[in-house]
Image (cartoon, rainbow, N blue to C red; front, side, top):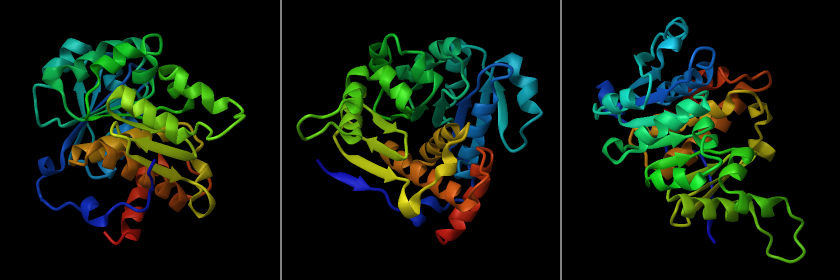
Length: 289
């Protein structure tokens, strides 16, 4: 089994040329209802900071006023249900999606099938509620997924979707080789048919063909400040923004993981999730962009 240790993203790719905003993609981030929009706003801000040309928040009517008072560079579109999302996705300029952060389970069950429908298909990040909503029937989610999806579960979400793959991780091995997070993530990606990013201090990314990347935020690369509410929502937005820019799903996933930790290290102690997108310009300067 080959595992690639993640190093800095290729600066040239992050500095993609082209003057028109639509040349850098248009990401759509779906939000939950009133009082639940913060996670989606974090993801959307991250997608914009990582270089997506445009980012729109799709929100139900109940959350529109709440969101409108909190955003400036981001755009806002009313999307109440799956039917409305299907209509919006007829605009092919919307070339990447992010669903899950703060979405709510009922809203996720309505919107995820519309987002993954064959007629709507485009690169899609699924996180948080978009994963938990299918915990009772993960095969239903797997049947809808396509190769341009990226799943970003933390430990609990991974265990709900892949209980048989997660269980051996907590067992005490009596003989080797022991079952590892890399083994579990590679098996999950093969089952889901798409890229899986298994979050943690040792984040593992795997593609369905067995390729595997490891981002270990330890030693000189440690970023303990990422243990803060909303940090995972920012990671989802980074990946969505890179997908909008044309990165392949596996490249968007590992580049997003690296940038996420690099932004945390650059900011340092006292970090909260809102700080992560604002630290990205400094990270890009450090890369010589």
